[in-house]
Image 1: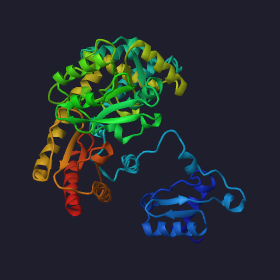
Image 2: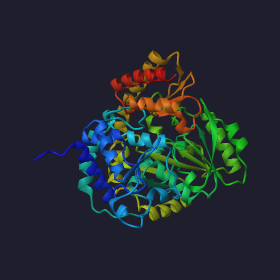
Image 3: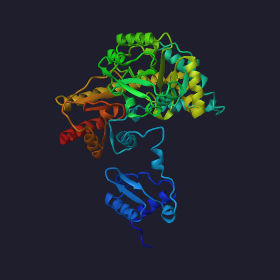
Image 4: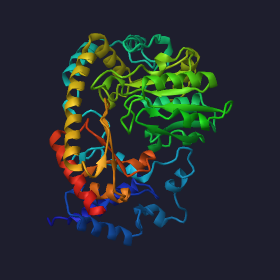
Length: 471
């Protein structure tokens, strides 16, 4: 029997996805490179397959954008067309991510790239032994898998309360809500607490600029400058209008993407001013446990005596993002309100993940894991700083972070950062350009948490080469 050529096999595979409704009219198909990798062929073979489907009227190319599904076999035979889902999604309340952000999200799962962008612990820091030991114990204790009451497992909330006490925060379990990571906490706040059309003050640059979370609720984002000492308070209060519906979102400890930490003095002044002006504060403190040189200053929540601060923490950065366990702490009325909103959305986080984290905390395995993580992060941070000194001492500036995952590198020469990002990606290097965080300097957020030392060295050499080629 004669073997069917690969280009025909690829064309048939795409036809089937279109006919089964997996790839609907208006949707963008994977890139030629991605299809070539899937079928282990060269791109010319994929191009031939796509040209066949274009001639059949199933696909169309849009210059500078990609290849889209234009029809299916039924629409070609029918007088009426099926819904164009791409057109319909343009009217959705949740806007799409920036194209570069989507590309980064898609690329972070690729094994063929050097990941200098990834904001999570690398495989060498994953707590295999601790999780295995805890899972064995938890499995023997399983009794039910109910929805719960929206607040989360009481035992886990009690353990988080005890953990926060070690950081100087006296927060009762009733004031803690278990969430599926910090982003869900922010989403709950945006739809359950903040008024539609409110002003949200946030740092510039800020991680939140890379997502459209608050914009989906028609909120106005006001960027406030960050210097080496944290948020610039004078600039914040110049823009704040008392009695106007507003809130401050802030990541004061090992800030993402700059790596800076707000000083104790500035924290005290910030809380004092926010309390006098009744400006609510959302403190994102997900990196607190990941200090390297010394424990960070007290959290804003610790300084808060009037219920001014809603505090967000997470185990995604310290254990593993796949657990999807974080928490939100605030006044009891706020927590109850948000737990009700939570029940209207997904009825709570994974019960098994909650029990696993509770066991890690109660057994002391979490603290044991953190000791190893901090020591290893110090080695990896110092190695990346060494590489930057060796290769970029005349071309860029940066600060040494005291914890977290990131080093913000600011290039001295003007360069097209969009072109640099794509050039690096084409050479198997993934970076996070500063513009996705509204950083208007030619900057790059580099992570030392995920990549190995060998990968970091290859990545920095490749970055230097790509910068030279794009100047």
